[in-house]
Amino acid sequence: MIKKITKCLFPVAGYGTRFLPATKAIPKEMLPILTKPLLQYGVEEAIEAGIDTMAIVTGRGKRAVEDHFDKSYELEHQIVNTSKESLMYGIRNIVENYTFTYTRQVEMKGLGHAILTGQSLIGDEPFGVILADDLCYNKDKAVLAQMVALYEKYPDKCIVAIEGIPKEFTNKYGIISGVEIDKNLYLVNDMIEKPEPKDAPSNLAIIGRYIFIPEIFDVIKKTKPGKGDEVQITDALLTLAKKEKVLAYKFDGVRFDCGNVDGFVKATNYFYERGE
Ligand code: UTP
Image 1 (tube, rainbow, N blue to C red):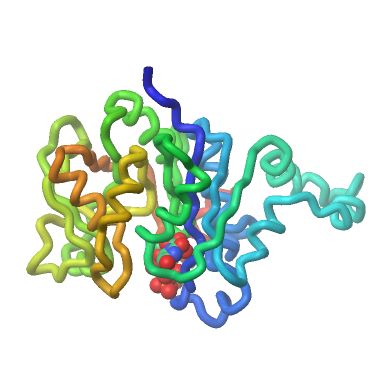
Image 2: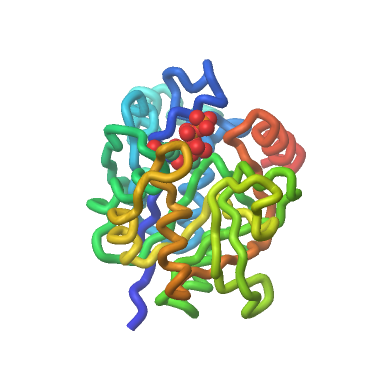
């Protein structure tokens, strides 16, 4: 029987240096698009994908994350029966109905290392990963929900979400190459972390949504630090891609890279214009 995906990992331990000084005391993932923190958008996407447990890898100075996904009795008391109360419905529903678990990454040794740090929260199960600074939106079916549906068809594979990008930006992403086995679906045969455009095998960039089979943890443990002396998840995935265990999926929807100011402003305008 296929193991259902019930947990999503959120690595939020990075320094967010591109957003200094805003990220000096506040995690990047707590910056709001309109009135909602990026991480709450991510959690709502996970919920839409049928996930009930949010496993969060935090770090020093990230306590705002835990406070956000908790009750605030004083605040609740202040706004009860006022016009402001409805602003709290969304987060209240999340706090009351879903489970949050936490662990700390003590040294920020990269995304691969952050995911490995989350192993104690995940156990021996397939799981989703959302990088909340990549804000994805699709009206009909959330991006992670699309990927969970695919996983149910291919339960022995990892799945990475990809997007076609202008070739000059390949050095900002993990880039894949593969064979198209279905519409918008590739069996990955190579992947490189942040290649220069001349070395990039394609313009298909990995964005911040993943489904992992539990084997990934052992593979990360054996993966040496790569680019930037960080343990790169792309390098770990390449090991599995060589065994034909990685699919790349061109998702339906839009994505904003809210890890940089330009993408953040675009996301703000997009959601403002939609009136959400
Ligand atoms: P980024 O490289 O985009 O985030 O990592 P960053 O390092 O925080 O940002 P800049 O480049 O300094 O501005 C992608 C995701 O992985 C997490 C980050 O929090 C982000 O969600 N991450 C990265 C960790 O949790 N731990 C790490 O050691 C590195």
